[in-house]
Length: 233
Image 1 (cartoon, one colour):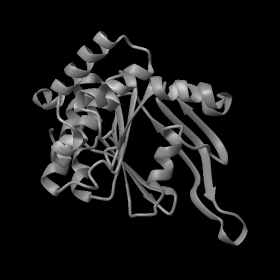
Image 2 (tube, rainbow, N blue to C red):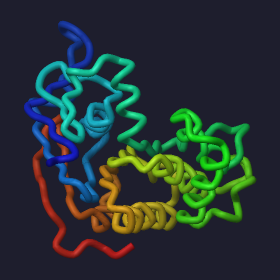
Image 3 (cartoon, rainbow, N blue to C red):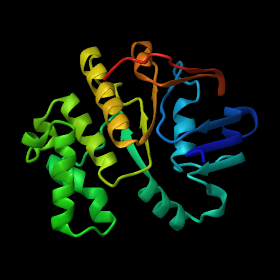
Image 4 (cartoon, rainbow, N blue to C red):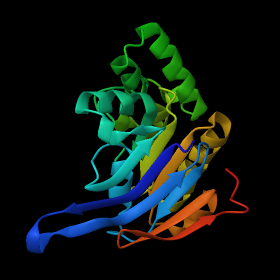
């Protein structure tokens, strides 16, 4: 079964003369365990696509199924519960709570899920160790570099054992060396944990890390390529 299944999906913004179609009857299937990259120029529809896959927005037309569940059948409360249990998110701006330590930020999804505090702390510490930040657990976001903050965000996205992780331009605020380090980390976690990753970028240098490359242009997938020899993490 596909983890992501979009069928003839269309999404537009605005009305009448100001209406802009962001996605044009787009279809996409992603299998479990893939490390897929959605790439293209700014305004090509990358963020809109990830918002639909992440159940953060609803399509105007077509079907969105995540892990076999049709989003159209879910009310807002059920959709939020399903999203929190199934999908992890990594954002380009990190979206860490500034007054919380790295450990406390990673624990947040577990607290929302009702995981007991002691268990949540232990799981969060293990996840920070997985991203190489066990020594930074007590630091606040402002005390860490951009690369470290993005590693905390990746740990937070994975701590609840999601089936799917979505990363919208996760390296946009990082330098080239740190960008490759972050994508390499995501690739390693994808291989070690078997979690499906879909990330977006406009940086062609990162395409070699992906097992699959989906090029978007004007809201359409124009190429869909599987890498025969993706770069090692």
